[in-house]
Length: 79
Image 1 (cartoon, rainbow, N blue to C red):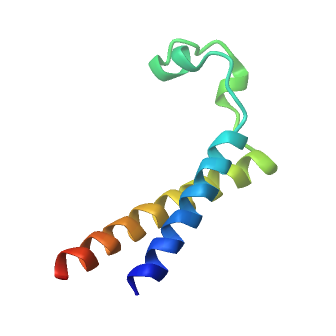
Image 2 (cartoon, rainbow, N blue to C red):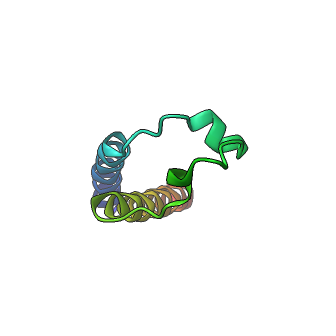
């Protein structure tokens, strides 16, 4: 069971890295974090198409990654 979970964690982590790398970059990431770029209407638009899929897939893979990591930690702690 441990080896199956560990293999799944490695596969999910590689897929998560690929999904994050494929995300489109934002031009002013620092100003978007602080919220100072409110005059730009492009910031307020929702993601569509492939970008929306990447966001959802990244969220799912992140949740899977944490779930598998917690499961492995519990399995390891029990012996």
